[in-house]
Structure formats: structure tokens, C-alpha cells
Image (tube, rainbow, N blue to C red; front, side, top):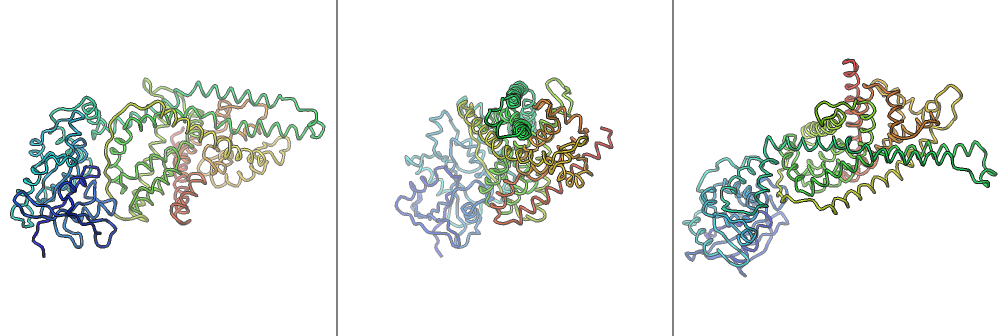
Length: 631
């Protein structure tokens, strides 16, 4: 067995670790593979200050000792002495980026707690000083309890001092642990991050105004108490704005569609058409265009301002760098239900649409984590639910002020979003303890700097969202309401009977009504459930089309649709309907992408089954609770 000491070079990705390895070993390097994995092993020879040779191994970059990839697993196993074919290192050189100290110190704290001899290379110190950041290496050394050597690997600065510190740290060369673990390895990410920030702040002599502002803002945004309050406040303002700022543009769109509808009804019929078409056929075509396509599609497009307001907030929060902080705040909560922080971004994407959210789960390495995230993604409130929520809330929830600038409608909207998140977390907890049982993986992230959002980027993002929404309204929803118009218009009801009940669609709805009547749903809701499987917002278009067919002389628009809801729905029914949409399965596209991502029908069938059951129970409980309370 070799007696040459082994030193491991460890650090976060992009800390300049490989550059330091090259500067220390030069051409005396070997490249191989660790046994059983495809991770490369880079090693080389180095002469210490006293002339003794050592083996230096450059380990893959990692964020923590909780591995989330094969590379990180090798790094963890080597520094803990459990990697097959590798000795326990006699010392560790931890490479940290001086300009990103608070983030890189998280991993450094875990490594120091292992108890091996450690030297910290404060690398790229020149770039930090160029950016106005001055650090006190002696102070940092005192805080960490290990030697800290400023280095600039690419310019070979600090290498002699690093070798001298390493010589002292290794001592006689025997592989012994100098300190017992202080228990920091088991600390969660939030506690580690807090300690890292505290040490980085204590070691900072001076910094630029931008860095000072970042730290001041993070002191609030990441605070264990103030942080969640700030996040909840932002979400609350966002949902208040969805209602308060959209009234005027919604009125413009309603007027536009009313003008188009009246134009279609009053448009003269060309002579050659009158010669080949009967009056009955011409009336049917007018009804198809005005009561079917225009009423149905217009009832959905009218919610475009609210969707754009919602995405303006989301895009601005992403561009400023706050959204990553929100993910960080959520990590502890997600860990409590067995998910890693990596699930946050897919779930956040599901607020726009579950399809890209489910596809984004490919970034999750752990299969059980990934499957759980896929199965709960439909519970995130996608933008397609927004037209349904705003229609029902606007029609049946009083627009009263609870407090100054706090309206009941916005509060209910926020409650529905929060309920979706809470439901997803409880579902994840149940899944992780049953069908997707297994250990959860950790998650580390680097905080970007705060910055002002670029208006051009925000405008481009809004334009993209608007196009997606309008394309969906002009294709899937238009086809759905057109088909529904045909099914709801024939056969023609005799005098004294409602067309929506006598027609083919009405008879199908009557069959569904038998199942959903116990949870408070009426015939109108039963009729809208099937189109909603094609697209969530199609439920609104379906109701608009059916009401227009029943009352062809009425005006179109959200106002008339809301008036119909107030006349036909009770408050318990409305609350049950909202609860159904919080938990019910997503559209067919979501089911299809789930099938593709899980390579079979087993998990999509499970997802649809448990979500339908959850929606049915939640809607029924809400309805009967509201009845019991006398609402």
C-alpha cells in the first residue's frame, strides 16, 4: 500500500477547482474512471513545501454532501472514505469562489464538519476585488477554524502559501481525523445558508452598493418569519390586482364581441344564398355563429386581461431574481412532505400550464421524487382555471371590502390558489409514504443578484402568453363550443321545454347529473364538465353557448353570463363548483403528457382516479358544509 498522502480537491461547480488542480500538478496528471460509474477520476502528483510528494485528486463539483447526481455521489463517498477503490483523504483543499462566498460556504461548512484536515483556497480573489468586494482572509479563517489562503489559480498566485498550509495540515502524513464532527452535516439547507451568510458578512471588509442592497433585501426575503409573510403578501397583491385592474379592459372586449355578435345577427344575406338556403337554415347559421362560436369563444377571451396581469407579476418576479428566493423559502416546506427543492420549478411552471410543468420534471434525478411531482402537478392552479374562477367569484361572491384595499373576491381567489398548493403538499405526503415511498434527495441553488426587469423581456413574455391563450381559444375551445352548439341545438325542443335539457347534450348531461347531484351540481354544471376535459376554460364557453341557445334574444358577454349564474346557482353550489376545479384532473393534454413521461397508462390512470375522487369528496364536503352553515 502506498504511503504517499492523498489530498482531495473539493468545491462547488465553477469555483475554479480544475484551474487550481492544473496549476498545482502541471503535466503530472492521470485520468481514469471510478469503479462502477462513468465519473472521471483526475489525479496528479504535487510536491509539498518540505519536499514530500502527495497524490492530489480533483473531485467532481458538488453543492452538498446530499448527492443528487452520480458526480456528487462520488464526491461524497470519497471525502467520507466509502468510495470503492479510493483511500480516505489525508486532507481536503476546499476551493471557494471569493465573489460568491455566502453560497459556497454552505458546502464548505459540511466538509469542515467531517473532521479531516482542511485548507480553504479563497479562489478568484482578484475578480472579487475588481467588483469592489474586499475580504479579510484572516477573519474568515478564524470564523471557520481552518487555514484560508487567497489564491488566483489562473495566475498561479497564492500557490506557495497553499502548499505551506497543506504541509502543516497534513503533518506526519498519517491519515487521522483531527476533530470529531460538530454535527453540522445534519443541518438543513436553511440553517446552513444562514450560517454561511453570517460568516461571509463577518469576513467582508467592504463591498459595492449593489452587494449591500442584495444582502439587505435577502435579510428580509429569506428571513424565516419575514420571508413567508413577504411571499404571501406579494401573492395577495397579485390576486387583488387580477380583479381590480382588469375591469376596464374586460369591458372593452365585451363591447367588441357584443358589436360582432349584433353585426352577425343583423348582417344581410346575399341574394344567391337566399336562393339556395331556406330561412330555417339561415337562422341556424346565424345562431351557430352568434350563440355558438362568438358567445363561446368571446366568453373565454374576455379573461385575457386577467391572465396578462397574473403573468406580468410572475415575469417581473422571475426577472428580478425574487422567484429563486421563493423557491429557497419553499425548500424546507417541500422537504417536510418528502419532496426536494428541485420539484419547485416544475410545480411553479404548472401555475401556467401542467404540460410544461410535467415535462420540466426531467431535471429531477430521483425517480420517486420525479413521479411524485408529476402526480401532484395538476393540483397547481393553471392559468386555464382562471376564467372559471373569476367568472364564478365575480358572479356569486360579494364585491365587499373587508379592509382598506382588501376585497373579498381577491381573498377568495388567493384562497383557491393556496388550497391547490396545500392539497398538492398533502397529496405528496401521502404518495411518498405509500406508492412512491423512498428517501428524498437534497437540493442546493445559487442566488442570483437582484436586478431591474427589462421591459422588453417582460413584454415579449406577455406577448407569448397572449398568443398561446388566443391560439387555444381559436382552436380547441372554438371546436369544442362549436360541437357543443350542435349537440345542444338538436333535436329542437317543443314549446315549453328548455332546449339545453331536451337536446342530445342535455340528455348526456342529465345522465352525468345523476352522479354529481349529491355534491350540489345542477344540470348546467353537468353539461359543462365534459367540454372542460378538452380545456379547462371551455367550461365557461360551454355555459355561455348553452345559455345563449336557451335565450337567443339576450345579449352576450360576461355580464349576462354572470347574471344567468346568479339566477340559476346557489352559493353552496358555486363553492362546490370552485372546489371541484381546485382538485379535478387537468385536461386531456395533461393526461397525454403524463402517459408519455411515465411510459405507460398505469400512472395516468392512477392520477385521474385519485384526483376525481379527491375533487368529488372536496366538492361534496364544501356543498353540505355550506348548506349546514345556511349560506
